[in-house]
Length: 450
Image (tube, rainbow, N blue to C red; front, side):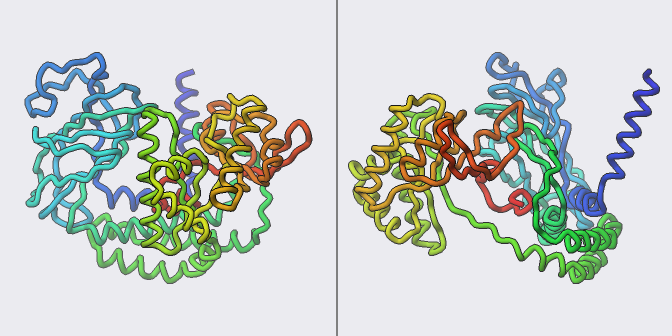
């Protein structure tokens, strides 16, 4: 039986390798050659019940009884210590290790960093810390992180060094790898659906794009990916590698022209929880600070637009910060600030009675009409953990013709099969509904956006 299992495992591994495209293999190789990462850390027990005997930031501390911990591994403490002694390599991207070196570290959700026993400070998620201004091969640094978890898994997402001298070459390599991934994704025929936890493939393809063109361009991308001189990069021959990159870039122009047919539009929104882990007065201050920041950004960027729900937030500004309120009125007149939701506050949609639904929408829409001369036309409940069957009826009756949410993607069991669809209530009311894939907090990764 053991022999059969080993054979099956080898077969699956071989099939997995066979399924890799030239682009996949090239991108993985480029990532591995351009990034010097440190894995195999030690993690202390949960600090809720563990008190280390001694100083975990000190070099003499014994962490031999702590659990091994790898990058992207999921653990579930409130907080814990992470430790590792790192050694600088001789060369990175063919360059001798010398000059300034930084440590790039990312922890889900935050951490405090010590280097050789010296505190370097707090970092929320991502941190960038200078290890030395005068590096040399074999130099050692003891890294200690007090990792903080605010919910869900605690993970070490990144621990790598950045050599100042190699930054231009590294950026060029990473940009090229990202371009390949975006091109491959745009040219794919993927039909899978995902949520935050699972992925299924209904194999439903309603695309009207030219399949022959996509197939031809995908074959071109695959062929060109095989011509990149990765061995030159591995040997540190950057000029030879860059020459091969310049050559293949010219051949990939048809793929670049295809990608330029697509446009992504971004509209800013602040999802402000009215009563979540903070007090009533703090919510008011969050609204005031957020709306002031939005106005400042609109002053800087004439193409910047913003979307905001919840009449209660506007009412606070009118009564407590009238100058902020007047600026909001001006931005709405300019068409750069859109009111959505039409409700007094974004509720959890499981909890309302029919009367409460009616009052939320009645008072919200009346306030928006009176103060701004507009009513919301988009139902907006991005963070609700449930959706009452009568919502299409209530939204249509209040003057809305569309509905947006995304929290259904947090389902641990099912993958909801639609992204854009008509949602029908029990009385026959239908509202056009859109489920985005997730929150988008940054727009610096085109592959993730595609």
